[in-house]
Length: 316
Ligand SMILES: [Zn+2]
Ligand SMILES: [Zn+2]
Image 1 (spheres, rainbow, N blue to C red):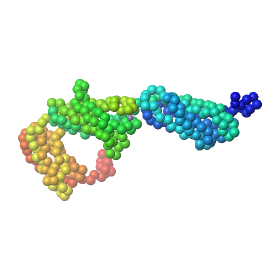
Image 2: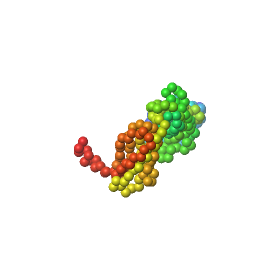
Image 3: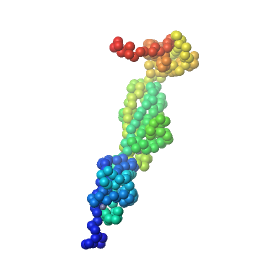
Image 4: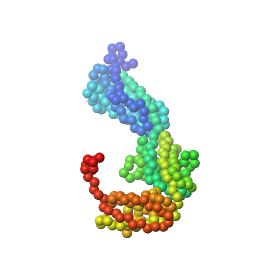
């Protein structure tokens, strides 16, 4: 037996977490924390050893290295949340060891944390105005809360009645200039009638190693009649020197871009539309047009007026 009747009494160490251990963590993520060990007798425990034991019994050894102002010695530790959800448990053990000529008895500290699945968030963009019955695409972006690679994962689109409209897969690499946002194009077929429709996008990854919570999003789209006529819009100069190409021409939901001559042929159904022109450097134009057959329209474009916002505010 150590420390017999006449031997010195072993010192008792105190083990404490310096900041509270998180109560929740996501599967597979790293949890950093700091532990302080001190001796009641004031020994310097630098060089002492700590053991971190996870629920599977795996032991990881670290050294107490950093002196603490409170008179103890600290170790910066990290553990990994297991790849399954539920309660996870770790223990920090201070094995019996002799430091500074004195025996320090063993001590331990246990702590638990609830391990949760990763969550995912969704963005939907690029929803067009399709013609009835036509195939069209929307862009869906998915991001994991722990930034898992999501390339190749399936995204599905359903209508309000639960009928699947289409599916697509996320690209292999994250979208440029984003952190972990994986983008996919989903192709679907528009209903065979005009109107406004809603659809929901579902992401339920089951091919990933770690558990993830499903996510869903909604969008609406307008289905329009098949075009039967062409409206040829000719943009003409009005004090404008810039080339007349790449101007967006819209007739209600129908749209085309001008060519280098400033001409755009917009295919539309019969009806009355708001015709508008848009390009960043030209003054927006809007006019009403009734289409009953193929027709040609000249529209004058002027350079965009620079608006002094302060001046404008004065008149509000
Ligand atoms: Zn001591
Ligand atoms: Zn993830």
